[in-house]
Length: 361
Ligand SMILES: Cc1cc2nc3c(=O)[nH]c(=O)nc-3n(C[C@H](O)[C@H](O)[C@H](O)COP(=O)(O)OP(=O)(O)OC[C@H]3O[C@@H](n4cnc5c(N)ncnc54)[C@H](O)[C@@H]3O)c2cc1C
Image 1 (tube, helix red, strand yellow):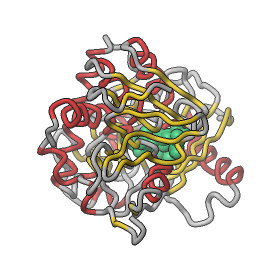
Image 2 (cartoon, protein in one colour):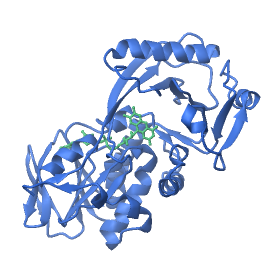
Image 3 (cartoon, protein in one colour):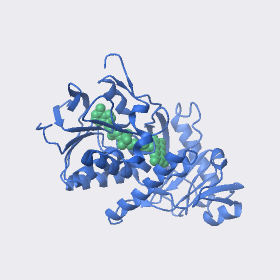
Image 4 (cartoon, helix red, strand yellow):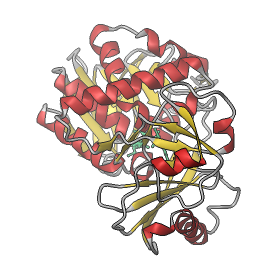
């Protein structure tokens, strides 16, 4: 494996989820030498089992995080244009009536709808709740397909992808990280980005850094395609449902009931029946497949994006809501790597706030 640690415009990215794929594309398109490794395959982690709702509304109680997510929505629109509309995103909005979503005043463009308003926006909901938030500019993206598109674009811009390659350790020269040890040998570059989702913490622990996380598994049910078309995705107390472009529904569990994953088949069946009951006009539903993936959630729930304290050449990007945030994070990481500038938007999300140094580090 060539040693690129003396090439100041070289980067190794660990993780081919949405964050690693978006960053690989942006860095390769900026003229950098990019090698991306994944232990398995594209979107093998959370990105392949994500409901993939692009939104800011779920963070409206935290002004800094809300602004970050609004900027992320804008970044998706920029990338949608950059990819000439080829990204599988539908900007069709959502309806939300999970109890705690209705606690605060809606922030425009979101509005509060009554039952008639809900029916007019989504006629398939047979018995609407009394009230729901309408968040009209949210996006729904096909996570797996988007990762593949970003990776193809990265390769077209010169990136090299290495699947089935496990990053086992970081190569250190004093306080500088020079790359990774893999099951196929050493790989070196001037910058190493860990975008390994729930696998990030164990790589960091290897250099004496602890990233506290609380990964949360989630079950999704994907149905066989139906003919009727939903107008709006929705998020209720029990389930959330969106329709994919091929007509299939993607149903997620909103309650996160303890023990729900002890018997995933029974939980999936319950989610399917709940969707049928809420939208009888769809006809009988049947399960095409189910997925279970763990959300990579830092302990305080916020993204962790930036250089690691005390080590040069090493950067971390771990977050829940990576589907919402990936293009923005890729742009801000480019700014960090190319211009050595931490964008103000990233200030609240620096690793220092959470990362602890263990004794052996
Ligand atoms: C059920 C569910 C629903 C979700 N819904 C939403 C939503 O509606 N909106 C939203 O914005 N977000 C949502 N998320 C969260 C979002 O999907 C994740 O934040 C995002 O996919 C994380 O992307 P990532 O690239 O950081 O990590 P991942 O997609 O997990 O990718 C990490 C990759 O790193 C690889 N890897 C790990 N360790 C190593 C190693 N040592 N060496 C080499 N490779 C390694 C893995 O194989 C994997 O492919 C949801 C997640 C789940 C599970």
